Amino acid sequence: MWYWLLLLTGFGFAVAGGTITITYLNFVPAGLSWIEFFLLIRTRLECYLFPLGILLITTALILMDD
Figure 1 (cartoon, rainbow, N blue to C red):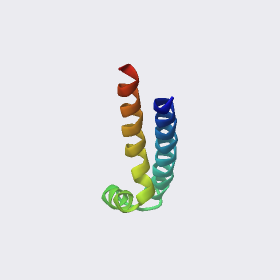
Figure 2 (cartoon, rainbow, N blue to C red):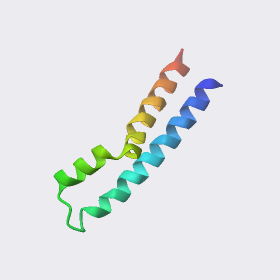
Figure 3 (cartoon, rainbow, N blue to C red):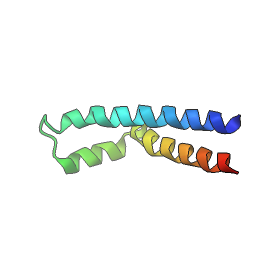
Figure 4 (cartoon, helix red, strand yellow):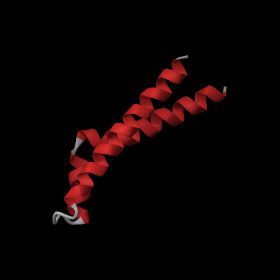
């Protein structure tokens, strides 16, 4: 049961982080270059939720297999 909770938490983090990252993509047509976009993403803490969520999902799936 704990693995399912880890999986769902990771899924929530991945969705939240991915949505925020896609939202920040709206700055690119407004005149932000791709380099400036990646520098912006690097400084925003909430954008790190996506890789953290993917890591939690992967960990939960590996541990469920045992």
